[in-house]
Image (cartoon, rainbow, N blue to C red):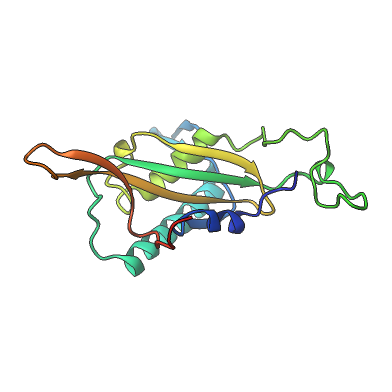
Length: 186
């Protein structure tokens, strides 16, 4: 089994998800007191803040370039997330004929940091006000962590749209947000 190429996976989808290099997780908050003042501080620090700000800027740019109207704002949303982790060198074969493949003792999926739920929290906060109104509008996640040729994330989302087909009662349908370019059926 070879580590997956995240850019190759995009071709299996009927739309173009957002690729963002690197992965940071949003850790716990720590209570800090200094000079009689007390506040909560994110344990991820500057690397998390920089990664999340860069992701937020890419999310905003995608919305600006692809669509001016955001019909999904205020709707329930369901983000999809693929986290790619580069395997350590000790798990990649260098033997002739199997170069680049995972060694037999390697588990088929990464069981290491960052935690999926903490990456979800970072993405939920990054998308608030841009991709969804607030992270409380996220009703569920579809997240997967896989070995990859490079470390990063692919993220896209669906929103729950009310269609009034036959009368006043709505029929709710999950739709992929139109900011992800449709490439045709796959």
